[in-house]
Image (cartoon, rainbow, N blue to C red):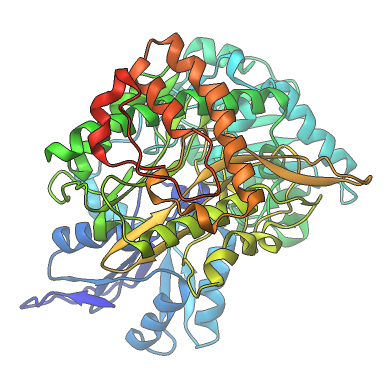
Amino acid sequence: MRVSKSCPGRSSPDVRALGPASRSLQSQDTWDTCACCAHRVAVVTMEKASLWTDSRYWTQAERQMDCNWELHKEVGTTPIVTWLLTEIPVGARVGVDPFLFSINSWESYDKALQDSDRELVSITVNLVDLVWGSERPPVPSEPIYALQEAFTGSTWQEKVAGIRSQMQKHHKAPTAVLLSALDETAWLFNLRGSDIPYNPFFYSYTLLTDSSIRLFANKSRFSSETLQYLNSSCTGPLCVQVEDYGQVRDSVQAYTSGDVKVWIGTSYTSYGLYEVIPKEKLLEDTYSPVMVTKAVKNSKEQTLLRASHVRDAVAVIRYLVWLEKNVPQGTVDEFSGAEQLEKFRGEEEFFSGSSFETISASGLNAALAHYSPTKELHRKLSSDEIYLVDSGGQYWDGTTDVTRTVHWGTPSAFQKEAYTRVLIGNIDLSRLVFPAATSGRMVEAFARKALWDVGLNYGHGTGHGIGNFLCVHEWPVGFQSSNIAMAKGMFTSIEPGYYLDGEFGIRLEDVALVVEAKTKYPGTYLTFEVVSLVPYDRNLIDVSLLSPEQLQYLNRYYQIIREKVGPELQRRQLQEEFSWLQWHTEPLTARAAPTASLAPLVTVSALAILGWSV
């Protein structure tokens, strides 16, 4: 779908350029780095300017773009290339800042254009920056800091030694690993920053060789203590040389003039670096050894992530109780609700900010999988509509992401069936036992089967990896074809859903740890341990659709929530929330239960009028 505005006297600049619309510094493509869904690509030709983006940015784009721009409400390489082929002549050249594209992204555009006799060309001086001039925002200047040891799974020296060990054991004998993804460098050195909204990263590259470590970043942002932490004053194999961010291309080019071999991950390495490395000196894998190593959390990292989810559950439960009391009064809208949830999270220990923009969606807005309200554009929450809230926090010990869908009134029979089938999909995948090294895409259908059985489905992925105070969408874990095989110690979200356009949307998302399964006979099998600890909405569950095994699993999950979150609520004297938790984790039975009454719970008797049922 294309949206355009009439514009008298349209100018025709003699420029053709393509690039992500999110632009900072001589920047890596930070959205790709964290595997988020914010695809925004701008193309400027001699006659037109167009923007491609997903549904979260349609309204903002329509309001902010003038008549010189066209908005295309779709994402991906194919629609952009199709548009280019109709707008530029055979033999034309399309200029691209190579630092804004991964190798894979560059090659997908390059092949499509070459097949049609157009050419993709590298322009290392970004044209947008030249036009921006003095109006360009200042570069980030906040400190880059080291995490306290209590919040790290290993020291940076141990991590470096581990990656070098992989280099030494590799049959192609790489002499260096080149890191472009921001979370790779942050993880490797246990460093964090605040350059990217919702992500604790800083602009950087790393060249780790068998005898040296070079970190490319703005050195003025490191305190003397952090530089000392990195051993930056020496030149040995465990001394980090902090070099200017803008010198990375020249430094990599100089390094590869010698007898070396550089190991890269093609999914996230900047094409601006890739193009200066001789092909015979490259060792290419889909993901770098750092990306793959980071995906498997050690026992300390698992403990940290579990702890962050307990505190996060406290914040979300406080929010659900607050909603039950305030929505019937007509005082809550999607935006004020999201703000209140962030306020509750902000009161939790080790909180550092939200992990993404909260999806707070009521009624028909919940049918938009990536909808987020604004201060100007939002809907009131109503007891008569479904409400979906997908949110997460960044804590020093972990990153969280949880989605719950609720209804405070009387849901329709179809809404209850759809919700329960989404819940069944969540349960069936969460309790699945499967062989070790199974790819996520091989088991993803278990989350969809209950919906497929009645002709329903959802159009987004079923889950993604998650980091320790890193990416909320951490590659390469998940259920897509490009994800690596599941392994013990990985964390992934499990998030089936259903969306009826123009009416309502449902999603139930939990974060789960891949653990070893206990089986009757010997063998290496895996399953999931859910670490999100927020009850589902009893008012939307049709118990008659649940099998005995599913019901048993759900009741056991509720018992775990009681055991882990209940004591924390009591310790903090949150008695109202504790009583709410006790009620909403009461075991479900196979028979249809009567309408809930909270009257027996004296401390929360006021909640009885809000319509929750067993």
